[in-house]
Length: 291
Image 1: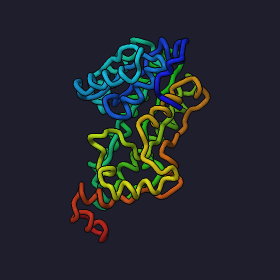
Image 2: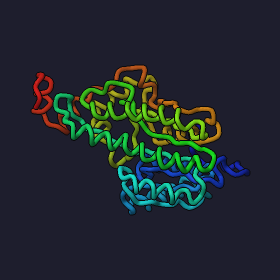
Image 3: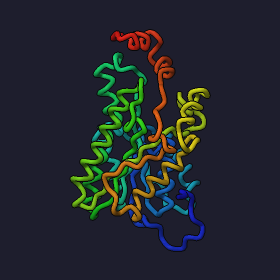
Image 4: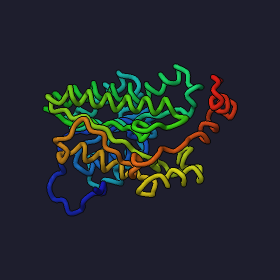
């Protein structure tokens, strides 16, 4: 499934005349997803916290989807409900067909070192942001007779990721939220699904702690049946499918896009926990002591 424009297409794309909102549209996932939806004819709005980043992303998206309609931007914090509501209103100037949220993140810290404040912080990043998108996006989509909401989880949502408990727990909660929302909103023809990416190279200049460590990266890739790191285009293709008419009878689903990582063990992230939290904290936790 390619996310590249089809030069042979002579008819409007499946999302022509409809809007799409990509929350976190300035990041690697967001840019690729926005380009894919723009290629399908959507008028795309990208939301993020920094206007300069969004403007640069809009240029990148336009280059990746030649002939697409201009990209709109909405500056705001996805953790703030009013900012998400504003982004939905901006995107809904062209009747919305799709809302995608790509934001999230987690903390490298052992269970015995995990305090309630950190757990709640990661919940806000991964679950609260999705809730805002589902509530306000769902309302807009229902008003137009239905549409698609796609959230972004992680392999951590279905595995034990040692030394990253708050991330694992919050992504699992996100997937549960998607299932309930899909069940409740189905009669309105609003579909809610989630993709579960594995390790993906999202930014060549900032590969992230795991991919920046050659030894850990190699060990992680070795546990994938399809032995490579993911690309943002892999995730965009899955989201594009879930936003389009081909998936019109799919809701409440979790689509793993991770090279088969769910068939093997998750990476052991002790090394990264030591980098982030310090040896003293990790050693205490491994010895059964609260640091």
